[in-house]
Length: 197
Ligand code: HEM
Ligand code: HEM
Image 1 (tube, rainbow, N blue to C red):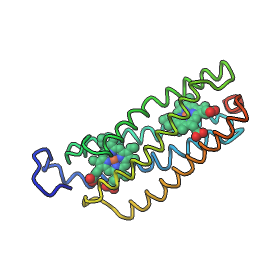
Image 2 (cartoon, helix red, strand yellow; image 1 turned 90 degrees about the vertical axis):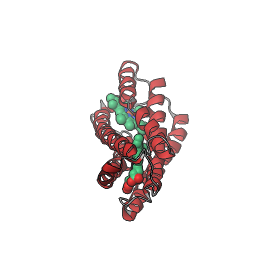
Image 3 (cartoon, rainbow, N blue to C red; image 1 turned 30 degrees about the vertical axis):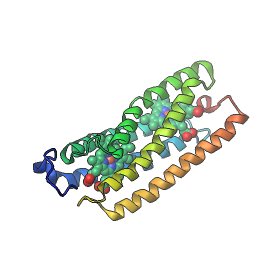
Image 4 (cartoon, rainbow, N blue to C red; image 1 turned 180 degrees about the vertical axis):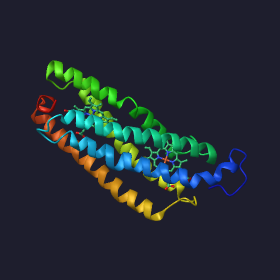
């Protein structure tokens, strides 16, 4: 937190920051390091009845967590004068806003797949857009911890927990990408929607 007087900081609201930071960190951490990566893996489990809808519902829970986290992040950014003048809030806003359309991309892919029984451009957009944004979101959590490291709300234990879980989730997502690249060479046609919808 700033030590010199800054006319843009809302000093009267500073006592609200520790609980806002805790709630923001927990909501964003659970969304980006746990729910959204797990939901991305879930859709790859073969022969699950209604697998697509399980994926869609699961990801929507993470999406709601992310939006709640965004609202708190913006509130904190206003109070601390840290809104869009640092890497964390800029990259975070880009990632979250970009992910707002992700459920619609998923739904468009699904509708097209049901008609054609083939993956198409919408599949690739939903899958790669999603993977890249989730990895950027995970990295951004690390930037958030760095930003908060001089704040009284900062928890070292929380930071370590986030780094371990998020690092693992990022690694799994990267691994999934590499495996998918290898597999896409072998088969173009997906059986996913036919077996799960
Ligand atoms: C915020 C919401 C969502 C996020 C973040 C998300 C993210 C993702 C990601 C990252 C993948 C790729 C998984 C991998 O790494 O292999 C994926 C695949 C998929 N998603 Fe979503 N998704 C969301 C919502 C939806 C919705 C609403 C639907 C459909 C109604 C949907 C349908 C699918 C399908 C069918 C696949 C597999 C595509 C394929 O066969 O290659 N998703 N999603
Ligand atoms: C990918 C999305 C995001 C993730 C994963 C994320 C995660 C985090 C984490 C883990 C912290 C540390 C919390 C603590 O323990 O004190 C943090 C801090 C912070 N975040 Fe985010 N965040 C994201 C997006 C945003 C956005 C969009 C904003 C505002 C527009 C924002 C504003 C802040 C601020 C101002 C802090 C510093 C709080 C302080 O100094 O105490 N974040 N974020």
